[in-house]
Length: 374
Image 1 (cartoon, helix red, strand yellow):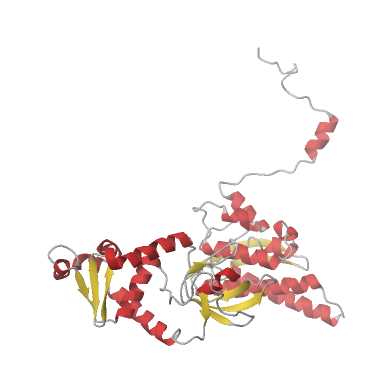
Image 2: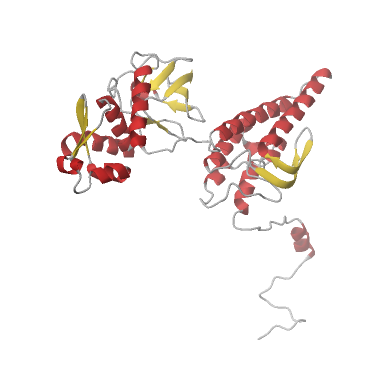
């Protein structure tokens, strides 16, 4: 039956002084939309949660409290809040977070209109106001921290946390500058599973026997699959259509060298440059040490936890060698250093080996011209 106002329902717990005291200690968590959890994750530096954000999360959006995605985490970073407290190296966590946001299209030069954002730090507080960008905010914060650092030095004291904050802001400035120069993306190439690359490499190698069209160069011929050529190029699709001379003879003539044609086909099929074939699985590979420059001889996935595809021809420099003999390298075009285990050294060659630089660049330029023409 209906419960009257003055009756007690046995299904409803009755309040007590102890329960009321517990309720007064409860923190209020208010929902503010579908993506508020993503903003909270960014602000607290939880980059794993940010990676799990839906693909339709708009990194160019503006939050009334946090500003842009590239200012949202500044307070957590400077005031040691959220995940920045538990992370031993907050600079590394900040880099990983920025890389993920950059991969999603965040831009440090995006204007936050009519901003009114409070950023609390361990040393001082800032208020970001007016039409401001993340880049401008980080530069100003770094400069203010430098002034505080010099003041501490004049007072015969130096705060290690302050020093670390200065370095962290300087790292962000460098990272933001790179993002602006590369169009906002922190990761310039996609990670392609090595198994997929291997499949397309075999498909390319099988072209010599299964290819149904020949590309004729002055110094040789290369076979390919017309279905792939037609799908990749409307020009080739027209040339290989019914009634054209190329369709009747099943060949396409070019003035470029066979080396240029092979590079073009390798890029078309696999997205990578072809291997020189010098290294073999099980080989020891080159002797590596800190400062040694190497080039990728055979495309492969790096051995880092967040691995990336390293195409043939990618140049890098060894940063360090660990106790197991594995190498940490900084590759050109990669935002983060990448681990390469000792068993993969055979895939590398010394960057100053003969025939790696000038000849490859000239042939590669010809392959790009051919691609543009087609």
